[in-house]
Length: 231
Image 1 (cartoon, rainbow, N blue to C red):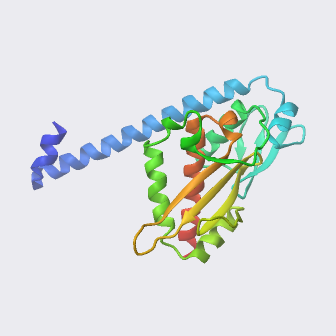
Image 2: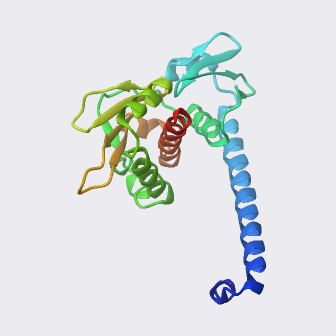
Image 3: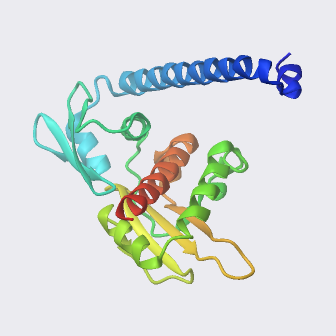
């Protein structure tokens, strides 16, 4: 039915197409919110009864007896306990990914070896997915910006510039024990910009593949946003 309507493309049909698109976007938004609430509730349930002192040891988050204090991508945050409310308020998927990490971490020691999501044991689930394609698109846009602007934006997110084989490389702290490395190759006459988002090998024990993918997307999206805000 939708294919028939969209294929006609007459003036009289355009309002109907627009109405359908608006309704579909509203449905997707509601579905996203529903999924978010279900996943957040599952993470909260896993955290019920957890020992905050032990959690502090596992994650490297500072525990003062009532709250956890830390930073995520250069943003100082506080997590109340046992409510698990994060302040200041973060974007919903960043909030969720932090709680999922707290609920699933095993406190694996950092290994100093970095892997792409596709190299995780469950990495096949990430390759070719929508967030994988979205990340590639964001990387290609980031690569169009002046390298100095990229450096300045990365610094605002707490990133440290590294000297790798790529044209630009930065190490970000998603959380104290979740470092994220971003390697960027700038475009030239033959090739568009490309890049890799890498996690310490310990992350595959402490983050589910979907949560790691979300963390990568958040890091890239925030970097692009800060670059654009500088212009």
